[in-house]
Length: 446
Image 1: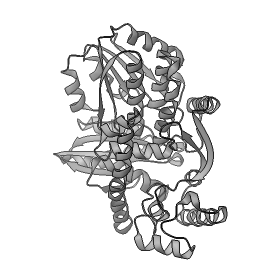
Image 2 (image 1 turned 180 degrees about the vertical axis):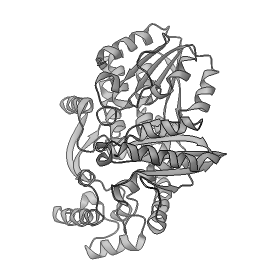
Image 3 (image 1 turned 120 degrees about the horizontal axis):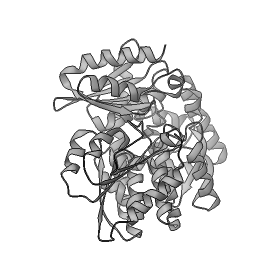
Image 4 (image 1 turned 60 degrees about the horizontal axis):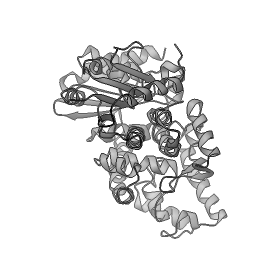
């Protein structure tokens, strides 16, 4: 049944404001760019409303983390960018709970102590049209219209969840329009090339990943020499002609690799500079991912809440994070992937990076015919991250359902979006899980 997001957010705000100002409100969110921005928006809005808060960013919103939270003495918990897939566990916590989510939901009707705001229950596609941060932003505005300045964070979250692919749409598009109108973001058309120099921008480019250039020192120098560009030059200081020449060469590399049109369209596209540290949204999202998935979750939350030192520290740590990703991508290009009938998979060392690497490989290394799974063996468990593409989703692929169905049959946990999802199962059930997911995806793509 379709419900109005704004009305639900007003009711959620009423629940929050019904608590005494002495209440310390618990905030639980995911640890990626969308989750961190969601948490930051909620925490900042609570702080402005006079409440104290305690925030935790979780990597895996399944059993262990929620078990720890259930043992705490909380009066009110707000879950953002998660919760709908863990509703049965949350209902047992006993305290008042608000869920703000855009992932697949388990059920519409919840226990009396749980108030659920899920984009998919409101006629909004949670894969493409709204994310945790844009929903959290709506809640913040319901608390106070003065929270409009948090809009840049919300769109950085949507950008981190790749919801700009094909252009912002639906609920996100409305928020972009409002932010532009009120001057909180500025639009320009440009290529993604960060760093203090051309060399850094090209060498550390992971998304897009330029085969033969990204992570390849010789390949980067070869390109710069070919185009007669100095390695220490900043992209912003190039002449218009030099910029166009470099952009054309990079686009040609991606076309030769067989990148899908919707991915090519994301390289040179309308970009938005936000009021947050005067930073472009995708740049902001990448920094947040490097904090969250690079083991510095609190750093990302701190700079989202205005800590300039934390922002500068994040810039310094980013290269180390990207080098880890580049090392695995280079290895995958060299060694290839394992295959089943309907999917490909590879083994990764780091469960936090597996999904990132899988997403990049899906878009820039392999063809579009099969989804890709990252497998990480850790502490007698198998952590799985799966990535598809819009082409496969249009043919019926639903990775969230596949992960959930296969994992639960094997006493594990799983879920997510149609295009990206995850699961955790016992290590010894790996082969059985892979065979089961393979069969499910074969059936989906019939």
